[in-house]
Length: 58
Image (cartoon, rainbow, N blue to C red):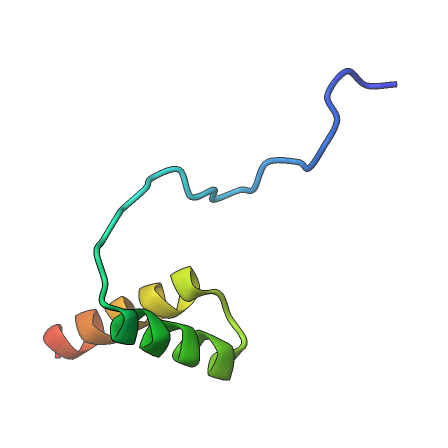
């Protein structure tokens, strides 16, 4: 048996942390969007950032 067990590493793993402070309302809005789109909160935030970036680059 292989000495390495567990999940294989992702190709593009997220290694960086970013801590932000939110109000309860802001946290609920992020969770609402994530639930509505069927994604994680992190993915919802990243999608929002990419939409804003695309708008800036127009």
